[in-house]
Length: 69
Image (cartoon, rainbow, N blue to C red; front, side, top):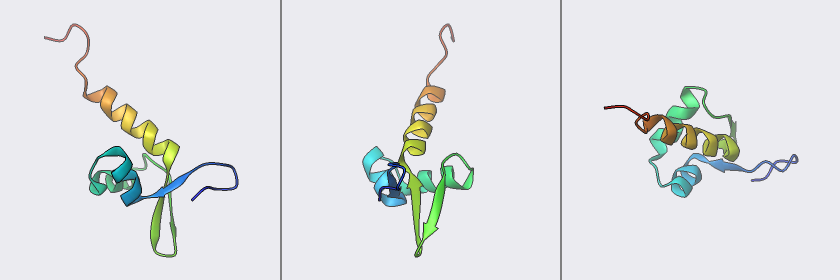
């Protein structure tokens, strides 16, 4: 779904599928307030740019720091 402002919103399952991750991880991001979501007609929609940013932050945080032994 695309909002009037041009932002793309996807269901939890769609986000998980596009990112190759489990839907429970997407739900964790929602529960922790890391991505914006809305409930419409019983379906949870996630703001796609938020999901991409969260996934990028997660990858960056999991990398060892330079000089770490």
